[in-house]
Image 1 (spheres, helix red, strand yellow):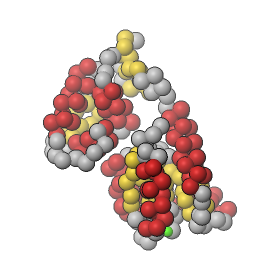
Image 2 (cartoon, helix red, strand yellow):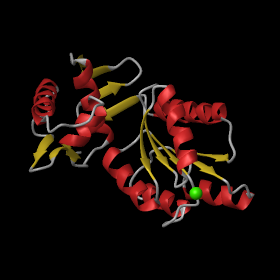
Image 3 (cartoon, protein in one colour):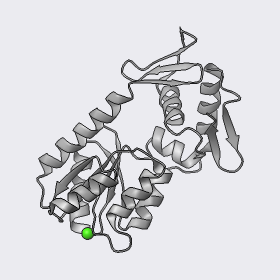
Image 4 (cartoon, helix red, strand yellow):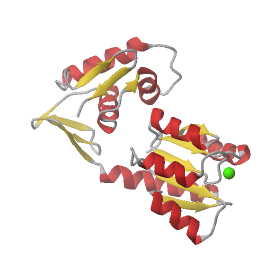
Length: 220
Ligand code: CA
């Protein structure tokens, strides 16, 4: 499950650096936000695999950030907070957090929680059905009306990205960064070619639509 994308929300730069250095060492990709407003923005534009969320943020309270993300997404959220009262913990879990880690925390504990949440999250969605496709995320196979569809690794990852973000317009930049991993240098041709080839292979020319000046959207 390495290469998962993790959003680190933390206003204290020393804690933030500790977390990102750890993630980097373990091959996770990450993005950061130092306040609640940016956290919500980054969560919606990058759709990370996990959010690591501090509760004491300078603008919006972390619990409110959970509420706002939960309004449209079930992405896993792990709270990392200095607030150790049971009531704080209950409030965060009630709002929809998946797990709660109290500061100061051990690095090894953080990594274990991340792995557990990733495993749990991906297990529950092992078989995805969308339209006439059945996607098995364990074996990476795609079937259309029972017949296997041959996709390259990138095409498969692209398909999964669309299915997990149904009805959301995905920016070419977001698609590029999620699938190819590097920084987007305006290389729209790579994205366009792969999306077009993938949607032709699965017969979704009408289902994955081009969004003017943005990118693409899977209509569900
Ligand atoms: Ca804080």
